[in-house]
Image 1: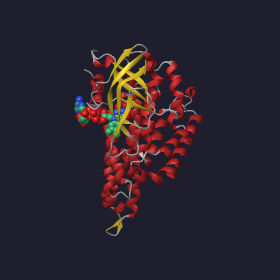
Image 2: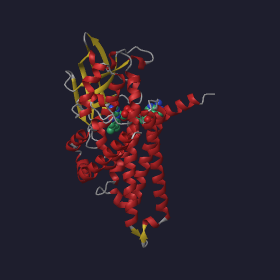
Image 3: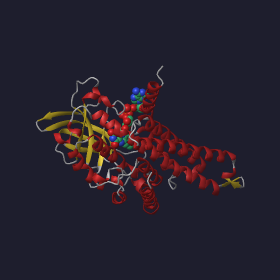
Image 4: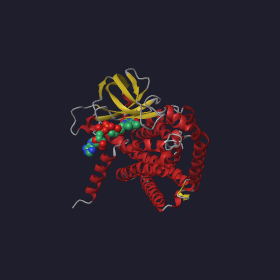
Amino acid sequence: MSQIAEETRSQILSLVNDFVRRDVMPVVQEMEENDTYPEGLVDQMAEFGLFGITIPEQFGGMGLDHITFAMVFEELSKGWMSLTGPIGTHHVMASIIFNSGTSRQKTRWLPKMASGEIRGGLGLTEASGGSDIQSIQTKAIKDGDHYLITGSKMFITNGDRGHAFAVLAKTDTEAIPPYKGMSCFIINKDTPGFSVGRKLNKLGYRGVGTCELIFENAIVPSENLIGEVEGEGFPQVMSALESGRINVAARAVGVAQAAFESAIRYSQTRVTFGKPISSHQAIQLKLADMATRIQAARLLTYEAAKDKELGKRVDLQSGMAKLYASEMCAYVAMESMRIHGGYGYIKDLPIERYYRDAPLMIIGEGTNEILSLLIARRLLDEYRL
Ligand SMILES: Cc1cc2nc3c(=O)[nH]c(=O)nc-3n(C[C@H](O)[C@H](O)[C@H](O)COP(=O)(O)OP(=O)(O)OC[C@H]3O[C@@H](n4cnc5c(N)ncnc54)[C@H](O)[C@@H]3O)c2cc1C
């Protein structure tokens, strides 16, 4: 890594760290409780350039590497994991456009996405099932110089606040295997026939909206078909999801780190049987185990990010990082709650929020069951007798 890149990384991390301590920490509990969209905080993140952090400089972004991006996600998640929502799938969409879009699509969308003027999202999941993505029902039928899109998407992050979405639809419903008939479209909020449905009420990951998207003969110009080729949507999206999974792993590391830091501080002030609970061996074993698991998850995440940066295929590494980090996060959040005893269960402290936020990382960007199957498939290929 060059010295300039290292300096940029440390500057951005210190900026984000200050932002979290100064602007996020004082308001997070109340905003989370009220499920308030953190408009001012998200605007500040746009001003810092976080909507363009991995978008190349030629398109107005910062062009930073995937490890720096993971570190930023970790820092934000230490304060409030929901803040990564509006920029997480935004970056997956930007990466689909950068990797697979035509040069016209890149110049049209990426500069405005980098500045945060256009905030993106990702529409894959449907109500009938997210794991079996090839069974989606949303259809796109070519009609002159545009497509008519019909169907709906479920659980879409930032559906209410996003301005445009990368949406997977079937342009050929007869294709075998089905993924060969899938195409990816950029769909603007103001598209005729497109509307946003209800905002779902969630266990955690509050503040940021999770919504239904509805397409009723939505009229989408042909030039919004990614790469302007049909049938390529599935690999376009899957490749970009590798970085999405690295981001989810980094969020899990951040939430777990915050839960651990609360626990290690609390353990030194809470006294039972005449001494701080940190003197009890049972608590020490928990602290050691939590810190070791967090570090292991962090290294898996950085390793996947490093390989992604080198342009390698990282479905195995990103899958392992997301799988391990998310399970670790749920475990560490629970251990932190145990260390805090009854106070950990009360909303005055952030521990119960970490506990509620952790499951999203297990379910989102491919459930851990599905990721385990993908990891096993890749390993069986590699070790084929
Ligand atoms: C807060 C939130 C935000 C989200 N944001 C987005 C977004 O921005 N964009 C988007 O497109 N989606 C988004 N999702 C959707 C998410 O990706 C899906 O929920 C997830 O992929 C699982 O799909 P499903 O909920 O339909 O579960 P299902 O696919 O119905 O799975 C149910 C259960 O069965 C298991 N299962 C299914 N198939 C198999 C199998 N073959 N073998 C073993 N186990 C299996 C699953 O692991 C799971 O445990 C979001 C979800 C949430 C909760």
